Image (cartoon, rainbow, N blue to C red; front, side, top):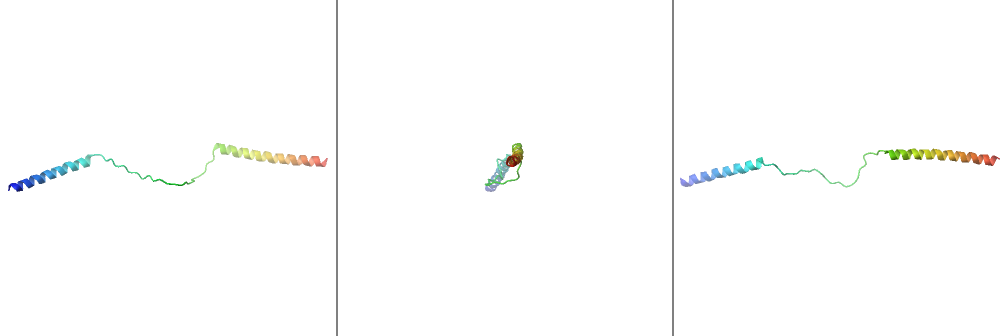
Length: 85
């Protein structure tokens, strides 16, 4: 009968130990770190935007083109006038 009481006491102590350890695990904060960050190689073009500099460059190019055409026309007309005389 004495061994029966000893076994019951050991079982009760084991259950008490499990409860204390379980409570400790359940009440502490986690230190887990989750990340879904993946490294990728390559490039992708989503869209193109024009900056103020590129707009100004376009304007300059268009003005130069117009001025160039005017100069050509003037030189052609000047050449016609010099050959006619």
